[in-house]
Amino acid sequence: MNHATRPRRSVLFVPASNERAIAKLASLECDAVIFDLEDAVAPEAKADARENLRGFFAARGEGGPECVIRINPLASEWGTEDLLAARACKPDAVLLPKVNSPRDVHDIDDMLDETDAPASMRLWIMIETAKAMLNIGPLAEFGRDGAARLDCFVAGTNDLVKETGILSTPDRRYLAPWLMQMVLAARAGGLDVLDGVSNDFRDLDRFAGECADGAAMGFDGKTLIHPAQIDPANRAFSPSEAVLAEAKAIVAAFALPENARKGVIARDGQMIERLHLAQAERLLARAGRALRKG
Image (cartoon, rainbow, N blue to C red; front, top):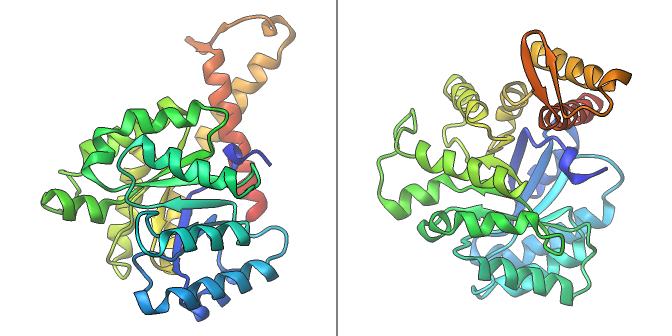
């Protein structure tokens, strides 16, 4: 399956040190899991956390959620060992935190290539520093580079709030401009982009509202910190029946023999271009994948 068609509506962070949480993953309906070796794991627990991941991936079967491993920054004392452990586990992707510049992406790309990591092993990066925001355009360009592995941006909203000192409000009014900038850059680079976590996992009404806002901004999905957040995220980031019907109608219209060579067609008083066909096909592919998962 082309990675671009994978649904990433609900992406659950799981501490790699938490064996109980890892054991429960088979019963969850999240689209992807990020096994965290960074913030969620204490320094003294990192070696055991790597062993937990080796055991999980050794027993991993076909199907199931997309599996990603978040390592520590390469410049940290744990980064290189984390990357080598992740490479051996063969996850679907490696998530690099604290990215500041294109050089960070170059470096991990080179390290994965040098260790003969399969081309199918993708790279996700956290956008969680002021420097990453200033470099968001050049970072997104890796999505257009066929030799690069970059696949997805992940908004690190907690770190952005901490680093910049902006006020964190329920409506995220001060974060919104940066979140929209992430979406714009991701689209320019052909990347997926995931909204940041919501810290109060008990307030599911507020969480659902945040998911709705994220979907309206154009995010592909949301990162989660608790299984209770999976279902609201899946609902919010799934297309409505009306949207699916419109996408099917666009595909059907371009499939008509008289439209086979046309770049633009008229439908219900609107001009529909080939780019709308591509969007409709991508939406239907993802919706189909999500339906098969359910």
